[in-house]
Image 1 (cartoon, rainbow, N blue to C red):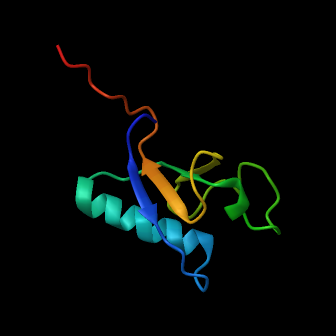
Image 2: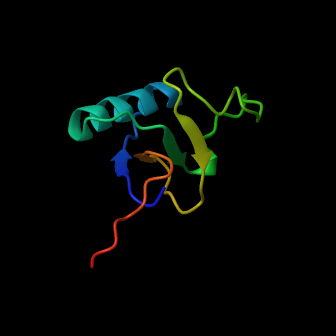
Image 3: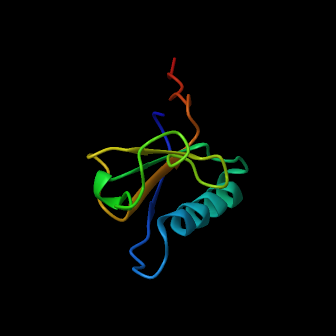
Length: 88
């Protein structure tokens, strides 16, 4: 993903899945498409989550990936495979 939407949510009472759902709902409203990938900081992965394909997805089929370049409490949402069009 080369382009996407950055979402900030620092609510300590909400679970990570709920935060991703909220960001995805806003993305759908703003861009008219469903996001399918979300990058989060590695520290945001719950400690009781076992790594693997099942834990890397939420109920909306959004793939959750970690990246140390995304700040904690930020969610970089988008569509996998999106490229920036070149200007001619």
